[in-house]
Image 1 (cartoon, one colour):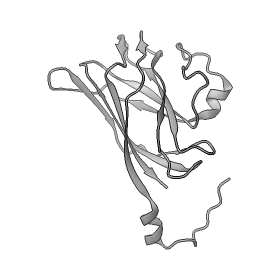
Image 2 (spheres, helix red, strand yellow):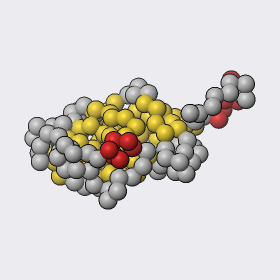
Image 3 (cartoon, helix red, strand yellow):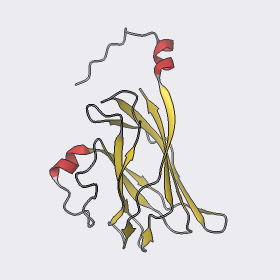
Image 4 (cartoon, one colour):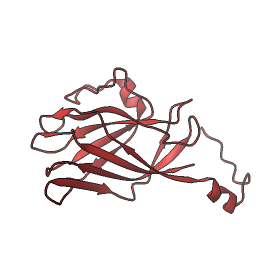
Length: 165
């Protein structure tokens, strides 16, 4: 368990040590046949925490897709990369090692069509605390489709708004 010492820094010194970052990631393509299938394979969110083994608050996520489609999906945040990088395509048999790495899940809404064929989905005020694995400054994630129709992750970009401590 982490030790908290509230007397190490003044309030102003503590606030000055927090960093806000906006990290853009393009997940590796995967194809979702339908609901509850893998939408994209495990990817790295580099420098999500300030120090190795540190923690952060995922405050917002914006997903953009170069197609006019329902892009509702669930993002599973992990403290370490999956062995082999690919979650079970049916999401029915996740091993205990994967479950142990889960920091949280974030359901993304279906999105809004922008322009002639792009979709944007945004989730704000998430406030999810996540901790990187010991010795790492990265978090990892994969996606599970929630859309009834088949969609592809090709052309999807995720932007994470993160407060680092």
